[in-house]
Image (cartoon, rainbow, N blue to C red):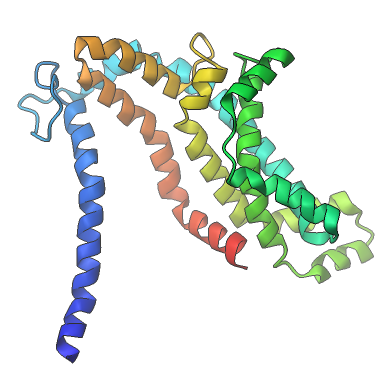
Length: 277
């Protein structure tokens, strides 16, 4: 009985890795292969390798026809301020929720983290933005992303701050530091793992968002990369230009893949620190 158990101990990880490789590798190969094919070969996307490779031309056409540079600038102008607001507001609120006690604080915390479970009502959001004059603008999109992902930031940061000893803050107060200085000099440096996690999570979600960006921003000069991809796909489907659509997908995914590969360890440590401690 010992030998089958020992054999299964080695076979099980191999099976899991193989299934994961199939689940990720097959769609990835489909995208990469189609993005390198000429139009005639990419009319019906499949897993066959290209007979004639032309990735450079496809990626160049996707850049020019999809207006990727403008979409990249628009995405950064929306996502960077939203991430900063999520981090600053989330860290401040989490510090209060972690250090204060009382029914009112507990109720406020429950309301703030309820955004993890309750999906935003897009119709209500659009109507409110129209009344405020923010529909179709970058500030309106920044406000939507901030409200959507603030709950996640507060949840992880609150759990992490509760694990920080009170004595560190008390020592700073004895030295004459005020609340703002304690927060900036003591709390924020200790929040680096969770801040890195929140930053990457918000960037990944917002970078690929097309649903809310479509209703809030629409098209036009303020369109982000996912909106440009949607417009390119809508136009190119009638021309069967799948090679351009998949080339756009590859180019749009590269920045977030690089960010994830660089900071994947911080993601895991931040999640475990905020949710377990």
